[in-house]
Image (cartoon, rainbow, N blue to C red; front, side, top):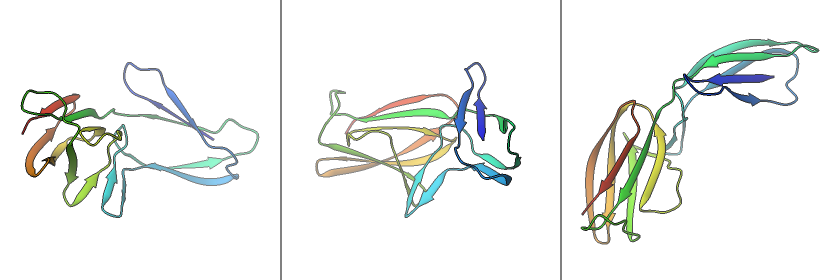
Length: 144
């Protein structure tokens, strides 16, 4: 079974599953929330879709996706250079949002529109910032 995901102006991506048994199938794409952490999809969530898997035919579901804004955050020193000793944590309500980078002073993720709380720790000081995300990509450098 395959899912074809396409957003405006880009080449469609094919997502496939192997060994899907014949019969009714359900496909849903949703942000993952588990143990106080949230991991956002790179596109808006897709509602539940039901599909009948039939042997001997090409089982395909085609969906249009809306890409989310790519958010790139950096913790910097007073001169604007990245501070390797700093740490960035992004919160969605009480959940921590998973980022795609391993460096503590950098944080990158696709995010849905909304307001988020960013906590930046520079050595012994901690500051909170409001991050408002829309549909456009966003890059922010936080200074102490």
